[in-house]
Image 1 (cartoon, rainbow, N blue to C red):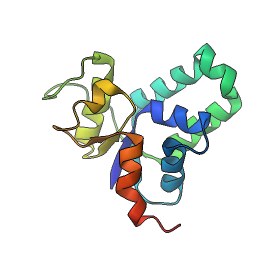
Image 2: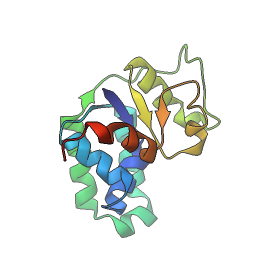
Image 3: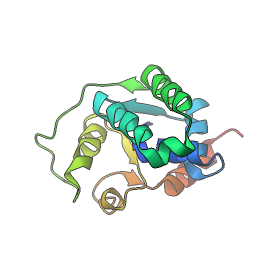
Length: 140
């Protein structure tokens, strides 16, 4: 299974080591699924780690390490652009995630309500819902 993790899921995983986002990242590390990234996704993740409220809670060195790790461990694909995207988010800044998931034939995991409300038309899950989907297949 291929998955696109919204940067908000990665940030949340570092903010709370016991919540669904952290358990999702751990499941990825254990090989439960493949993660797909693009330059746009990694760029948004870098920007998010630079926000003052996030920098207060996540060490910049840890943030750099997670971006580097994702860059090497995830499947890196070219940004697909938004051309031909049948469905769009209320927040146009999130459309790249929809395009990335669609072009990679991947499920999108996000905490963003604008994206989650599109879940009936596309395979989009909240971190909790995705964890419930994969937990029966995890070994530990």
